Length: 435
Ligand SMILES: NC(=O)c1ccc[n+]([C@@H]2O[C@H](COP(=O)([O-])OP(=O)(O)OC[C@H]3O[C@@H](n4cnc5c(N)ncnc54)[C@H](OP(=O)(O)O)[C@@H]3O)[C@@H](O)[C@H]2O)c1
Image 1 (cartoon, protein in one colour):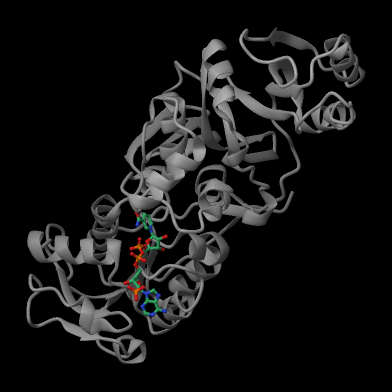
Image 2 (tube, rainbow, N blue to C red):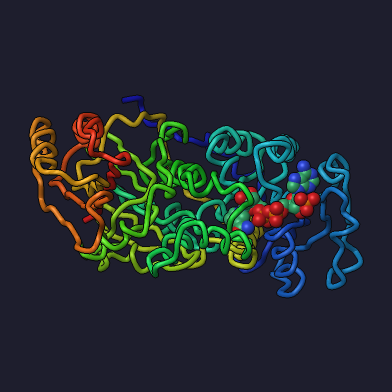
């Protein structure tokens, strides 16, 4: 394994003058991107007037339509990014999103010695390490407390509150859209109807793939793995599974097993071996993960010394996310130095060894269970239970097999054999079961 090294070279403390105890440094702030979060950040800065924070510039394309009556007349509204970057602002708050041009604005601000606060998980997941190095080299700071789980202080919690522990495991609900859809399906709704409701409420994009496919959650998991497990993993290494695989019948069987279904992001490090997964999984009804409803997010971080710590709350939305952004700005104004957590590049070389839920949809005939049992036994996989509910037609019969802890690769080999049976009407669905 490569030698652990600090992701951020030691910065020159004198480069960012710390205020005297009890006083805040005065920071001139420019918001880049006046959308849901940007306008909420402005609202808090204008209404609450946090000590030391002065909103001086707002940058957005076609900015005239963004002007608000409640903002002080002194604010410069601009659609010229270059001019705002060249101005005397101390901090750029990047809330436009995406890799480009947001990434180039952030880079240029840091190059100029300014500090940056962002909620952009994509940018931080892919370029966070380089940008932190740049910030440290140029005497500025990069803060991204809002990039994972919006208003829930998971990142500051891991960076500060749990820095003294050795975190071995992370489990979380990191995508509010998926949680909204799955918690509604739990109540009996169909996927397509709930997705339409989520889109109408502004929780889901017109193209929901980023969320439902697990791509958004894996970017967030990669950020948390760096801070918690201290490993730098490319988001692409984590192969996500889509929640679109889940049908109402899975919720019905899950309930019979004392579980529900959530999109879970999980990672662990055991003796240097790292595993990570994102996708729909069965969670026990007694687990805190099952309690999160609607767009709530949750992260459980398990420390070697301190045990489990649960973070939960509003993972998205303008105001909750803006609170995290303003908290980052206050930390800058008060000269709080973040704990520099060492991390090292790493690859996912391990798999979770957990029980699985496997749902089949078959045209019923004698011998199906015997054939499935044989294929599983060939891979040394032990069956825990076979569950078949009454009331389904025999020409499209769903039933479930749960198996004792096994590696996904062994199960995949067994299912490759099983899926070729002519009675199988659809691909068998296998889900990890969290215990
Ligand atoms: N919303 C949340 O709940 C939430 C939670 C956590 C993190 N975040 C992150 O916060 C960031 C902002 O999210 P948001 O929901 O506030 O997005 P949003 O509502 O779409 O706002 C983005 C703003 O940036 C402007 N913009 C985008 N590209 C631009 C460009 N190339 N030039 C000039 N202006 C540009 C947009 O202008 P137009 O109006 O012209 O499009 C819009 O005003 C994203 O990184 C997101 O992932 C959001």
